[in-house]
Image (cartoon, rainbow, N blue to C red; front, side, top):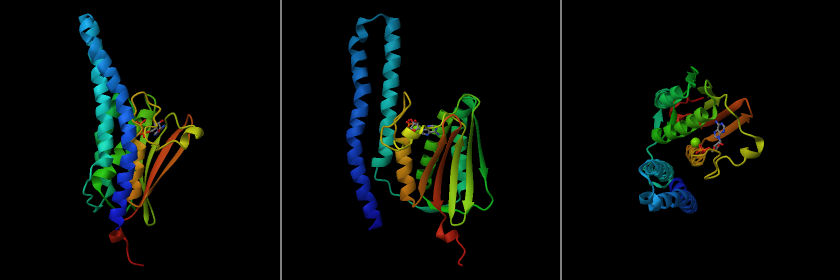
Amino acid sequence: TEELMRRTEKLSIVGELAAGVAHEIRNPLTAISGFMEILQTVPPDVQEHYLAIVREELNHINVIVSEFLLLAKPQVATYKVNSLEPLVQDVVQLLQTQAILKNVVLVYHFDQNVLPIRCEANQMKQVLVNLVKNAVEAVPEGGHVEVRVEGCGQEVAIRVVDNGVGIPKERMKRLGEPFYSTKERGTGLGLMVSQRIVESHGGRMIVESTVGQGTTVSVVLPVSTDALQPV
Ligand code: ADP
Ligand code: MG
């Protein structure tokens, strides 16, 4: 029944979101049709430029649809006991290229007392990808992003710490709102998707930020009961 409730809740969110997705996709589509219509009337070098815009708009639609599908796809969640270390390593490795390109130092640190958690590994990776990406995007050249995994009693905290631009107080409450993005090419879906996933794992997400100093996003999850010693 818990699973059923989760699915029902998910469906209603997907319904609400569908309208938003349609809206978000209409803008790039309008741009694409506009450029396609006048494409043949302009000289080749301008055509090249228009085609580049069309490609970028198509790519943006693709990103929106992919993020949306993550929510909408009826995926069979297989919760397993997972150690966080390889999971975090994978994600850091995946995003290392992007960090290096931007001259950002991306590192991770593990506490010794971290117990395994029960999770759907792919979903948890998705959360970390979203958070680390945001962190890398928030720091200037030469910036610093650290993923820290800390054990605290029956919980595990995964903290993504950056020394980036930070988030002003008045924007804090809008975080996780669908399509809320301050980026030119943002989807504003990453935090929302992450929050849903974390909550479905019985965890919580906490954002702390100081403008000009940086942001820490913490994902706090219960450790797997299998990993707990009977008291
Ligand atoms: P997107 O990354 O596509 O904009 P997200 O849902 O991932 O969408 O993030 C929403 C917004 O939250 C971002 O546009 C940005 O303004 C803010 N944000 C998220 N993470 C950070 C961070 N680490 N530092 C500063 N701002 C952030
Ligand atoms: Mg993002």
